[in-house]
Length: 475
Ligand SMILES: Cc1ncc(COP(=O)(O)O)c(C=O)c1O
Image (cartoon, rainbow, N blue to C red):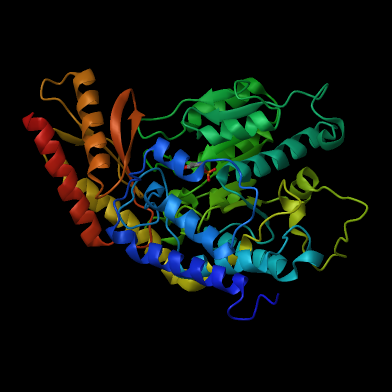
């Protein structure tokens, strides 16, 4: 059966999938933001025994959409402010559909030449936006977790190599000690990466932070002096709660004096470099050794899509390369993507990143970062006038922490009130945001990352939060 011929089951299934997808995207602004189907409903719809007989592909696509419908979260919509979640730019969604249809294996150049080149170009464009040194190597990962895994693996290679140890061949048993330094505010995925790398989540020195969650450079200096040998240091550009940046220039200086490796987790914060008004936050970032960022957050590429950059391509490649007798490796001019990530066969993620950057252009990325960060300020300004409301962070980027105090001043009562407002806002369905704990107090956490959020969405969301907070205050 020729899939290109209209009227075939293949053609019908793809046409129906495209219709359903377009309908979903078109109705994103009007859907309740949270899922309304219960766990039991979803299990019963999707469940049952595996049928003995196969089905028509269009019927399967339709059944999938019917089962999923109200179990979907409108996280790609304009009023989703939870976690740090972007939507899908139209060109990126289109590129992602094509990526699926093309079904390229982005492991080796020989099985996906266009995929390999799209990655090469999109990676260089992104590195340029961040102001990273020319010649940095890049790996396309599932997200920030695996990007940090990759960057820290490169650092592990480089520092153990300095100590005369080949960690890829010899493993970690009997290896020279490799000190790891993190911030008290390092994202949990840094610890996940350390755990996977055999470096241990708890075998770390934690550096204290200031009231915004920024690493204290003087504490880092003392810790590195006490350690007295090259360490793997993890800094952060963009705290997941406050959006704050570790002060990179003194951190770079301390790590250079120590002879160690500096990894910067900029899962969303690295994109601040695109905005002249916020670029100062990333000052010094180009002097690090490896960097993590996500495309599925602020760049609004559909899941999943992360980027790992390393300033030392040889260490990056040594940490990741597989090499197998039957692989047809490139002779040098071409880039084999598998050399830069943990996977061999994988999705051609570069197409969607390339398309997102082409749709936006340099000025569009600047505008996206500036606009959403301005919306974060609009949130803070619109909420802080309300009774008993306190903004807990300096709104330097796209993150806002809001607390709803109890008039008695009691911390536990303020925690309960804040949680009650968050739960009621989530249940209302107009918007979605989550909660967090910041400096021992509960807080509402707002992250503005979607390309399709408008000023009107922010105003409408502020009105809902204020109304609900007022109702809870009135008892
Ligand atoms: C600073 C930081 N690092 C890492 C991550 C994890 O990203 P991912 O879920 O893409 O692995 C996040 C997610 O919000 C983050 O904010």
